[in-house]
Structure formats: structure tokens, C-alpha cells
Image (tube, rainbow over all chains, first blue to last red; front, side, top):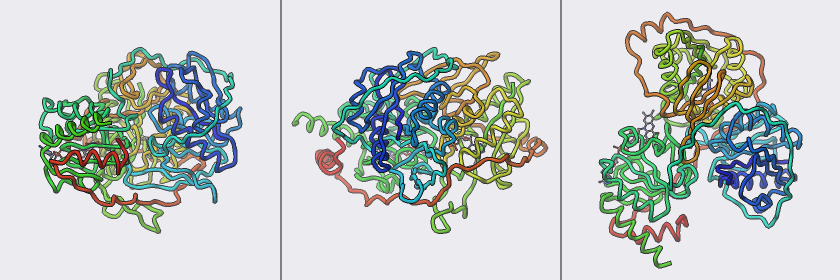
Length: 320
Length: 247
Ligand SMILES: Cc1cc2nc3c(=O)[nH]c(=O)nc-3n(C[C@H](O)[C@H](O)[C@H](O)COP(=O)(O)OP(=O)(O)OC[C@H]3O[C@@H](n4cnc5c(N)ncnc54)[C@H](O)[C@@H]3O)c2cc1C
Ligand SMILES: Nc1ncnc2c1ncn2[C@@H]1O[C@H](COP(=O)(O)O)[C@@H](O)[C@H]1O
């Protein structure tokens, strides 16, 4: 059986976990076995609906204490569940929590693990999983040598597949260790779309000259319903908050659309965004390296192009 | 307090990524090696700051690697830290590496283990989580702030769209990222002192590798940028809607 861990925030299933479920179901199909979901705590979503992502069963451990994330506790419960349910492959989303627990679960199951997987495993000869390496500049095909396997799938690399199923929900009851962590404060940027979960991202660099000029970028993001990001010098100069910094040393993202405004396209910046499906570059310098990585390019002054683009987006939305 | 800081060696961020031997090996030709930025800028510097506050703190550095990692570990010692341990193995399976670090950590009875968020070459982001499981320590990942009073640490970690503050008791594994500390540059005194700091080489313990790299591939190159005139943003919106189908 392929067991997929379903991660939640504020009792809502994360989109990256729905992708992971679809991915796990596709592996199960390949292996000729069932795909099941594992949910810790309670969520507001109807769990039977995970059938739509290919789950035939949903195992739920309801303890309230599992609502606050504790890597040690969560990995212990997930490993115990995987053992008792005789899972052969355990799948995680390679998101913030997935990164914290998938490797620990692999250790507890003595399973080989591939994190940052980018496609379905090749199960013809052995079990080979492709993953991104060198911050998206290359791929590596990794053979997992152990009988049990753990895979953490990159966000936005598999997509959500729709099935016509409803899953059977069953409660399980694994021993839950005492919490090792006490969460004392949660701060969320109100009203903004979390960068790592966003489908559309508008990003600005030093070409915007100063924080006072960010309005045109924010207007475009608002028109599109996009999250906002920036290059490293921009967050280092405190023009924008640190959590917006994307790149090799910042956050790595893979949205459907990345619009880069006044960013030169340094290799360390590209390392954080090169997995985006479509890249639009707005830069006044035709020689800017970013154009080589772009799908669409506009050579022009951001201060003219961006408001015009916002107007065009709004016009197109109004026409629909 | 005894801190173990994990140090890994990675190609410089601008290194040309190419492969040899039928795409099975990373081409090291002309590659400059650096301390993995997350290890150097964030975890090591934070450990040094903790020692500056409390001189009784002991900082040990560990790397699992061949003799070619010694210049990297010397550079790390020049930034700070009391001594270094190198486990002599070039195996790059995460599980194998974690077992080696855990063996040293057990023997040294460290209160705190710092790793980086991920290495910038293989991007596994696995070692910290694995160490916590092997040692049965608590684990806080992607931390951007760390403080400690007595046996209790206050740590901030990234969550989707924000951050979370938590309290957690030692012993503890932390994976560090931006925000944790500010990058430092080694000074002459540090470089001189590093020459005489102990660098112990130990043999690896028996552990199996659970994965092996079969081959590398380069991504398919973009077909080339399509230029849109700056005064024709309606056309860009049309392309994004109808051709790319992303809005
Ligand atoms: C180890 C290491 C790690 C790094 N990690 C990261 C990282 O994670 N993320 C990151 O972003 N960087 C990172 N960097 C820094 C990186 O090398 C670049 O310095 C940085 O990305 C440049 O930011 P920028 O493009 O905003 O600025 P610049 O390079 O200064 O580019 C500004 C661009 O704006 C254009 N421009 C100017 N005016 C206008 C206008 N009116 N309209 C349109 N365009 C205009 C210019 O033509 C230029 O191309 C790292 C560097 C190192 C050494
Ligand atoms: N060979 C190694 N020796 C020592 N520490 C390592 C090694 N590989 C990885 N690490 C540590 O683990 C962190 C995460 O690496 P990884 O899980 O490989 O992405 C790195 O930032 C280092 O702190």
C-alpha cells in the first residue's frame, strides 16, 4: 500500500498534500496496489473527498494534541501507522512540514528516501526516483535500495488529478508521545497569499529603486491575485520583508507564473525560481541574463510597463 | 553548553553544473568549493554568537567527507569553533551521513546540534530530521531565530505565510536558515588560530547506504524568450491566458 501523509494548516488540508495524494495514487496504480491517506488530528474538509485525488481509504488519528505541529511527535505517529498498515511506500509533500518529518520517518522505517522528487518513480528495474538537484539546475535519478521507500514530492510538479471516488474513512489509534515542543506564538501575514503555496507570483528587484516604488508591483499582484516576492538585495536593504526573499539562499518556489520586475537574473536568484512553469521578465536592459530563462520578455521601463500590464489584466478580467 | 555544528562542502553558487562519466558524476573540473552557505552564514555564526555570550560554551564542528573537505573545515574553524571532527568517508547517502554524525554526537553528548536548511548541491534537507530520529532529540526545522536560557530554547521557525515561535527543551536539533545570524568574514587572527585548532579524523562506523545515484540530467532548455512590445500589454495578457494558460 502507498500511504500519503496529509498535512494541514489551521485544520485545512494544504494544496501540496492534495498533489502528494494524486502522486501517491499514481504510484499505487503503477505498483498495482491501493493508495491511502493519513490524517493527524481533525480537519474541516470532508475526508471522504480525498477519494477525488485517488485515495481508497483515509486513516485518521483524531487526537487534538496533533493539531500543533511537533516534528518528533508527528514523525513517531506516522512511522507507527505506516508500520501497522504495512505501507511499502510513504509519500509526503516536500513542503515546510514534509521537510521536517519525512527524513525522520525514513529513519524510523529504515527506508531509503528521496526528497524533492519531480516525477513518478521508474519501477521497471528497481525503484528509481528523479529529483531536482543543484537548486533546480539539474536532475538526479536516485535508486532506493531498501524494501520500504519514502518520497517527498516537490510542490507544483505533479498537479492534482481528479478521480471519481469517495474514500472510506477509518479511525486509527497509535500511541502518541508527549509533546516535545510548546508553540507560544503564531504570526501570519494577514490577507496575503503564502508565497510557497501561490500559483502566481509577482517579484521585484533592485530595478524598482526603492521601497516607495513598490505600489505598482502590489497593484499588479492584487489585480492577478498573486503573492509577492523579491530578490535578495531588496530584502537585505529592508525594502521588503525577509520572508519574500526567493533564491538559492531564500525560499525556493515553483508557481505556474513568475513575473520578475527589475531583477537581473543572477544565477543565485534563478536557483529559487527556475522551476516556475512560466516566467515573464520585465527589464529595461536587453542584455539582462534573466531573459535567457524567460518564456516572455518585455524590454522596457518597469515604471511604465507594470501599470500598463495591471490595466490590461483588469480590462481582461472585466471582459470575462 | 556543548554545540555540534554540521559543516558540509558544496560547489560555489556560481559553479558551472556539468557531469562526466556518462552523466553519472558531477564534473568537478574548475569548481570552487565553499562551506554550504546555510552552514556558514547561519548555523555556525549563531553558535559563535552563543559562545560570545557565554564563554563556557564549547563548539565542535563536524563534517563527513574525504581529505578534500579539510580546507573547508579549516575555513569554518577560522570563523570560530573550538575543534573539528572529520569522519573520513565520501559516501553521499543522507542516511549514511546522518548515522556518522549521530555516532559522534552520542559520544560527545552535545546539548545542541545545528545543521543548515539544506545543502545547495543535493538539496536533500534531510540530515537534521534524520539526526533527531536517530538520537531521539526534539527537532525544529527551518529556524530563523534561536535563544536559550538554561535548558529551555526559544526558537522561531518558518511556516506557510508566516512564522511560529516555540519553546523546547534541550537536547535539540535545529536546522538553520536566513534570519538566524548575519554572515561574517574570517579575520587574520581567526585564520592564524585555526591553524592550530585540533582537527580530528575518525573512521566511519558501519552503516548501509539506502540510496545510490544512477545518473544526472540537465533540464530541457527553454525554447527561447518571446518578446512582447512594452506598449502592448493586452498581447501579454492574451499570451498568458491562451498560450501559457496560467491566468
Ligand atoms: C552565495 C550567494 C547567494 C545568493 N543568494 C541569492 C538569493 O537567494 N536570491 C537573490 O535574489 N540573490 C542572491 N544572491 C545575489 C545575486 O547574486 C544578485 O546579486 C541579486 O540577485 C541581484 O538582485 P537584483 O536582480 O534585484 O539586482 P541587480 O542585479 O542590481 O539588477 C537590477 C535589474 O533591474 C534592471 N532595471 C533597472 N532599472 C529598471 C527599470 N526602471 N525598469 C526595468 N528594469 C530596470 C536592471 O537592468 C537590472 O537588470 C546571492 C549571491 C551570493 C554570492
Ligand atoms: N557530509 C556532511 N557532513 C556534515 N554535515 C552535513 C553533511 N551533509 C549535510 N550536512 C548537514 O546537513 C544539512 C542539510 O543537508 P542535506 O540534508 O544534505 O540537504 C547541511 O546544511 C549540513 O549542515
